[in-house]
Image (cartoon, rainbow, N blue to C red):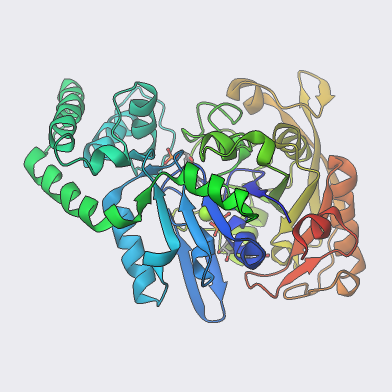
Length: 435
Ligand code: GDP
Ligand code: IMO
Ligand code: MG
């Protein structure tokens, strides 16, 4: 076995949590490498539903170690709350969870700063989750951030935090944003959370190295998706971290040479939450049908997700950036009722059709999708777990996506449960995962 990265190939919410949960038993450690509690990874086990935000989905498997890597931004209050919910559900968090001492800390005032950029007239609103993610990464890049190791340093933390809070409040006031920030209260609350989290914090890069040296396997759990990646996504309508495969290395301290395979997770259609261009968005009743059948409402903010058709140029771009040769096509069952299913096979930009992804959102907004319309199957695929039992038109749909993207669909998901999964025998996916 080897070290594998599971990541979102589109704009997030592809079903990464389900796949990580499905594969976690075959690995020893499950590692998050970027993002924060903007993520919402849903796992359904029988009648129990878990929505994990910061904690890797592998924690639900007894005995597995779940690691929050250095590339994340952590709101200690939110993390404590999440761990408490898991403890209440009988999960052995205290023995299973490890948190990087190099991960950055989200302060209450990071949310205040975010409110400015998201709500002031004249600013481009990204439609963020308002969790303070972007401003915390800004402070990280600005080299004034506070890390978990700083949070645990009782002598250093109060002074450093006050300085950063002062910085945030000054900015807020300059924009006329009212604040009720009490620095003493923040220091006290965060110091309390620090003591609770202290036993879980360590140098996770060393932990991962030692684990690999003793022959253990790592499963990396991406958050968000390729098109939300800070460098390669639909900038500026992106998140502020490296959701692409490279992030698995920088966000954990595991060298790129140790990453053996990448698996892209892609819905059989596409969704997006928040602002930004979305060439294949279905603004008609078909979009509503997908939203309702797929329960496409944000697991973090509850916002309705924008829904649209599978986008070949986007997927090809994603495969190129991440280097995945196999993908999991999720939520095929959501399309069960449709008589016809359009697939975007190219973009027409200024009269020329291409499958390349434009670099700017202006160009992307102009890109006119060129569709090929495939027949639907109008029968139930929900819960089907072997390829041969899928309706012929459903198989043809998946094979069409493979042909156009050049990426194998080694696994197809037909429902939220672990058992509702087709692993194609002889596929690269099966070989990589042993599933
Ligand atoms: P993530 O952020 O990538 O982990 O995905 P989310 O959990 O935010 O959203 C995916 C949603 O789809 C969750 O509610 C899952 O339970 C659900 N889901 C995952 N795979 C399937 C599938 O194949 N079919 C259906 N109907 N639901 C699925
Ligand atoms: P998972 O891991 C879908 C989106 C937000 C917004 C943009 C920036 O569950 O797939 P941020 O708060 O990160 O600064 O917001 O990114 N976004 C997500 N969309 N799934 C997610 O996570 C997301 N995390 C952030 O809606 O458009
Ligand atoms: Mg999600």
